[in-house]
Image (cartoon, rainbow over all chains, first blue to last red; front, side):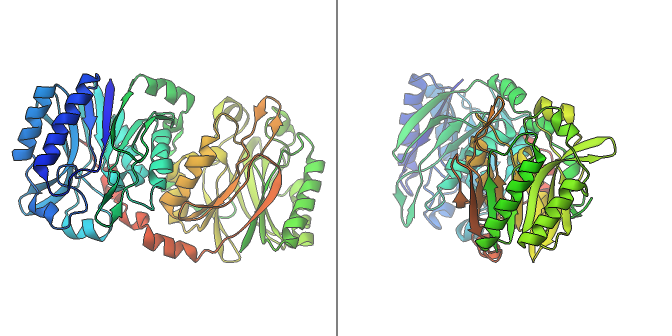
Amino acid sequence: MKIAIYQCKGTPKNVEKNLKDLQRVANSAAEQGAKLIIFPELFLTGYNIGDAAIDLAEPSDGQAAQSASNIARETNIALLYGYPERSGKSVYIAAILIDRNGQTLANYRKTHLYGSYENRSFEPGNSLVVAELEGLKIGILICYDIEFPEAVRALVFAGADFIAVPSALTKPYCRIAETVVPTRAYESQVFVSYVNRCGSEGNLTYCGNSCIIGPDGEDIVRAGSAEGIFIADVDSTAIAASRRDNPILTDLRAELYTSRVKKGLP
Amino acid sequence: MKIAIYQCKGTPKNVEKNLKDLQRVANSAAEQGAKLIIFPELFLTGYNIGDAAIDLAEPSDGQAAQSASNIARETNIALLYGYPERSGKSVYIAAILIDRNGQTLANYRKTHLYGSYENRSFEPGNSLVVAELEGLKIGILICYDIEFPEAVRALVFAGADFIAVPSALTKPYCRIAETVVPTRAYESQVFVSYVNRCGSEGNLTYCGNSCIIGPDGEDIVRAGSAEGIFIADVDSTAIAASRRDNPILTDLRAELYTSRVKKGLP
């Protein structure tokens, strides 16, 4: 399955403009044969926009989601994008997966909030999700979530073939995209797609460096610092071959890590 | 505390020669102010030597360990080296930590055996260990063990400041030393020292690339492909500052990873 990622600056606080970009980019990716296109964290509104993210938050079936659903149907491609989700009095950093029929397949709420801005403004989600898109089992994480190997393990044990990670990674933490993300793919023998912002937004400078990585830990595609659509062919049958080569998941010894660690001598 | 690592080819099947190297290198590291020197996996005997590793295996208080104990006392430096350990009918891939008084502080048996050679020839150990050396809490892992983030987490939760990893990493898996090892340090906010072989041994070519990495995931020292002693100053008080900057360990949500992963919609 061809999967596209869109690394971009976005337009802060302008949902209408970002939906237009969503349409343009979805259309281009579909024309290039992609079945799914993934956008960065809080793509619809911008990330570094303070309380405006709260003001612009919408339900997972709100007006913006309905527009996105129409775009998915019109352009015939599945969409996965980040947005601030309002649910009752709470606002979440969420990512929604909509199939090419305009149907919502998954809505994930970021479970690990990063730093003071996120913790002050948003509620954390309380569950991980895996959804199936045309036979591909997709787990969703958002930015900081990927730093926790346990989160990827949980998704892989639940059957995920492909971890989609809308992100807003900033300097000086670019090492995350370069070393941590490939390690997650390798150690859990799973495809990982890290879809980051680029350029600057207020006082933040994003790392770009978006990528799709195979279960052997090797880059299939990797962006630099510029905006663009990047496409990779994701063949989930490669997972079985890679796991034969690197049987980390079957060599795991769960009982060992929870038992007491001894001091010094056996 | 200054800690030295010794990246080397070693002399296959020649324990006497390797003990002479141990003495020479320990002496040089001590003269440079190091308090501990770490050697690669199965340093005493060679790694890729088939059944000879079984024939040359000794108890953790055998003749070679007694020689090493004398060397530690004479050179006034703690030693951590890999060797094949015989215990009853079993042989383990072990690593022993001996302090500068010649006292054995820890003996660790590799818990994750890699591939057909190791699984055919050796028994796996069944516990992790942390030992204290002059105030520094040292966890020990051996080569393949470090690919499991759970193993490092268990040692860190048991108080480890510094993970010592005698290794025998071969091409084409050099990516482990370059991306996985730094990720382990970063994600668990702990010092990690990966001490590898270099050069060739039979049909294996080792990666070199030994390193000591800080809790922020940055290299403090990194070898290339050549033999040598590499020394880094390890200040365990840096851990607290790094954990304030990157509070991954306190942001962990253990309950999340063991709960069921939901399908699609919340």
